[in-house]
Image 1 (cartoon, protein in one colour):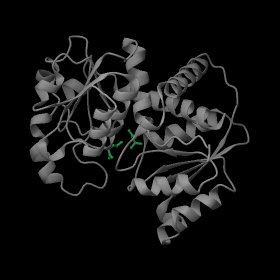
Image 2: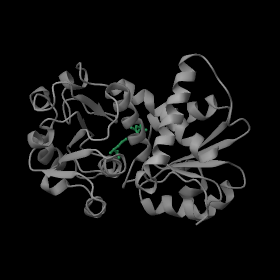
Image 3: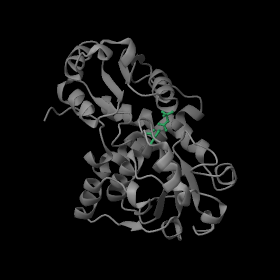
Image 4: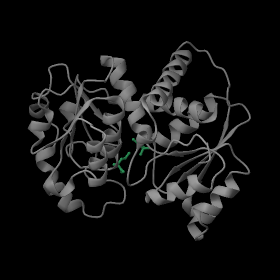
Length: 303
Ligand code: CP
Ligand code: NVA
């Protein structure tokens, strides 16, 4: 092992590291709100590679790194040599001579692994088809700000068993909360991740219906029915229809349950307007916390 502090997946880190990242995020959020800036990453450079679109991840990493005194370079695959076939392994070795950290959003998780294997600087997973760990740091930070420790609480995931679900499963094991998954038979979460969670003794339940998943939950969360790169929108929409989060479904959750969505949302599909804009929704706090969580992750990787 290189000893580099990569941030590739939630399940690579024990609770002490994850709590350290949360604490750093909260400390910097508090300082920012008080108008206090220090520049711990002055003179450092973050390169961000985007092989898929992004609003929140791109802007929060860029603003966050710059608030910490650093500089950022954003690279799309089509305007770099990646688009002409240069390997990520070679790209990793070159970028390591210029920069101090790399954040990548890509499709195949093997590309993330190649980058981390060949870079001599920390690599951060900004989403792959397999997982989205930075999102879940922000989500847990948001839950804990509103409701206290997430340990022992119940989270319901309703909808597609996708990359964000995988990071929730990782988090349920590492943070010690119950996760109830309500996904259609044909869109269940990754079987290998479920097997890992079972082996680790995670409290993960597969529900047959959305109502069963949400029953008594402290947090209800969902995501788009068609992730970036999914080709079968018609079939997905059909099988996911019974998993829409609406007010009737929220009534099955605890009376003070929160609603979260990583965004972008497709209003009227996976969630109705009344829920996403309703009193239980904390989506804007969640989106804001992407900024503070990225800073916590960067601080842990680089300091
Ligand atoms: N939630 C999230 O990662 O959003 P972006 O795709 O806009 O980065
Ligand atoms: N599951 C979604 C998350 C977007 C942030 C996707 O991969 O497109």
